Length: 311
Ligand code: UDP
Ligand code: MG
Image (cartoon, rainbow, N blue to C red; front, side, top):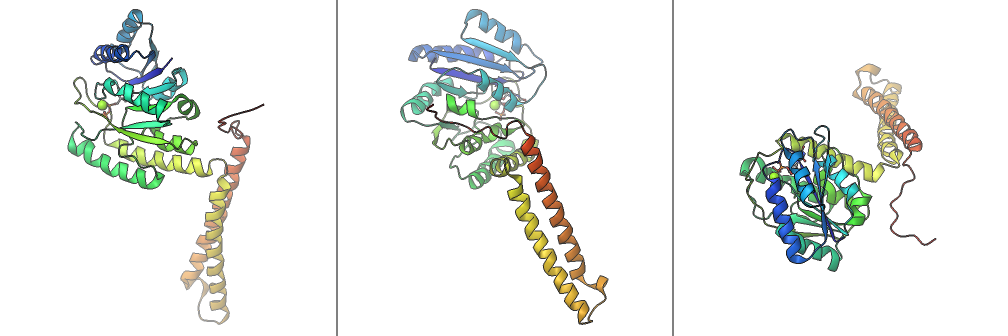
């Protein structure tokens, strides 16, 4: 199979039939074999009914329905698990992403050898204040922190080699950082394609402003887990040592000052600094050791992503 299209959706029953029709048309015009995996993220409207109807008409359509709303990342993760195509495309259900882009994305992965191609909504049809301007800032920080030169990390329209989606795990609100996760998993050929973006015709946006707070916390988790996830002591041990050292220096200063009789101990700022840093250092060490203990007991501690094997 050439292509798996994964569509996460939450209350999108009006858009789905139009989306399906459009996908079918484009795929047939280009003679591509495909499946569409619709992941219903706990919709309260008729979305699931629509998916069942689509399936009855065309067996290329597959569906998964969550019992409740778990979020876009969870939906994508489950869709990735089922995908069988050589190239996996993700696309929003709300018709803001155009299926016309699929053949070219497919070609870039297949012929130009990209691991991941991200859409770039260069001209964007969303509210300026709530989306466009905050997004610019979000993309800038993510670019700086991850070193990946993409303009639009959060575009719902992306294409992946199958290997990529089988090697990564997205949860929480990490769908915004899939390129970062993919890069840390060792897939470094990441490209970008300008894609058309359209106004939302039906329904309303599912993401409010809180997405930015959660988004940044998730970015920190990703950066931390990929660097220190398997060796927490390398982080806590280092910070703890620095803190301990600073505490020790302050302690020496306080003792010297005391010996030459200049101060009463508790009047000195050095006394408090030494206490603070020594205790902080010890606690960070402890956190590091606890982290190591947890890692050692984790069943995935020796799971590594293997690219090739000759046995
Ligand atoms: N979505 C989802 N679960 C959620 C929120 C959103 O599956 O909890 C889907 C939604 O149905 C749509 C896609 O994710 O297909 C993008 O959502 P939306 O269009 O609301 O985001 P925006 O384009 O406004 O950033
Ligand atoms: Mg949308």
